[in-house]
Length: 635
Ligand code: WT7
Image (cartoon, rainbow, N blue to C red):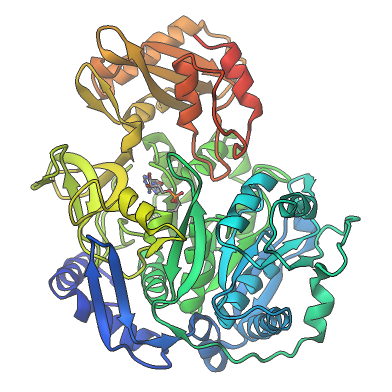
């Protein structure tokens, strides 16, 4: 069916029009033809953004694992579902077929059942990127338990907050994890977290690093012996379309993390549909997303989306720099990866290492390259396009959020002509709107505003766990009858969208609205610059002025820093205008980042405001050590 798999630009426009004119019919056809249901829906969609309440495929009954696993068994049972690539390349990869996946997930579901987990219970998963993580996620889905995966890089405090917020009964973890040359004591972190969690009765522990750990009697159980004894069939529990499938926490700009709740049916349909189209996946392809399953990218585009399409999906345990900076490209060559999906921060880090670590590898299998997570700067886009895609593989700059469940704005490769730094066009079913400060929709092209979505799509989060009011306040209150994304965007002359950054990062200088991304882009074009971040700070005359934190490629750069400052401002003047010139430029050893790679501007803002005594929570930083150095050298 053509509306499931778009192959050229006219088809995109035609399918898009249908999807907007008759959204119910559009999604019904896709749901009908590409998924297995225990019972079909009574109603496709009901919605009211003022409550807000959204229901898709109401009355339908299904289990997502029957779509991701069982239905493939007779057509591609021996096909590899998951390629597990371990941290250490010498360990060798594992190829897990759909049949093996089925057995492992069924066994795991039996273990959960024996430990008293029932439909609707919450299970917290705190595991490294090992096959057990995929099995655990799918076993929860099979039994109808709501999984809450917490990225295994979060601290014990962050873990405890998330366990308590959703009242998880069980935690699934491992003795530890490998991360490059290091090991991390995950079980120790779980033990610490559980001192503050009363609701957890059992902990399942996978063995990964074979470290000496303490098992608490009655609470902790080694996973493997339980799996060995478990039966390898488990009848999937039948779920209602709108039953929660999982909770995934995302940080808000203030307050505690928000547990975004995703539903069974809508999430399945949308993650599968977007996977197929955005990556143009074909039956024999090998697809690799470098994210961690602890983020929404991993949920939708390592596990659910690919498996619902019967794809082969790579799960990589390690880091891009181990044993050396060629690791990603070595994996692409080794598994002949066809679609490769990563983040701008990884691209910049790898670009910094030069081409010597790219050139030894055969990247000719690549057909589509993807990026996600933050606006990609022009220089990184070109580096990726020229050196990895060899100008042959389209780059899909995919804009979406934990809350949206799936990709919202993105080129469709081989259909949508790409444009550096532009996420381009909305996917079928997605109706973006740009809003002005007075709450009016801005029509026409060559405009910019706040990015909203004006019509429901199947995989939108349905609520914040335990706090529907906060869901309403955060997403549905800024603009009437609109989902507000928190991002700013511009729409160019042909209707392409460029995401300019969080609107909370917008800085008003002398009455001009400046997005952080375009300015950082300009700075990063300077050949000596590796990365940069800008924030505003109070200025007597301009209201705000700009403070730039700049990391050089060569930290020991011998050129006069004042000359470099001039050159950077010259570039900004050329690209954006003198209004965007930086008042202060501080050269840094690194920028504080979250574990998902986002620059923590909040901290940089405080430093620029000279409010260093109260930096707030820095426990989720990947590199807390850079902060003191930035404070010490603040201008
Ligand atoms: C925020 C959502 C969705 C998976 C990873 C992040 C920013 C995401 C892009 C992109 C520009 C992007 C937005 C968005 N973002 N993708 N292609 N171009 N910005 O999920 O942690 O929920 O973050 O990431 O600001 O709102 P998340």
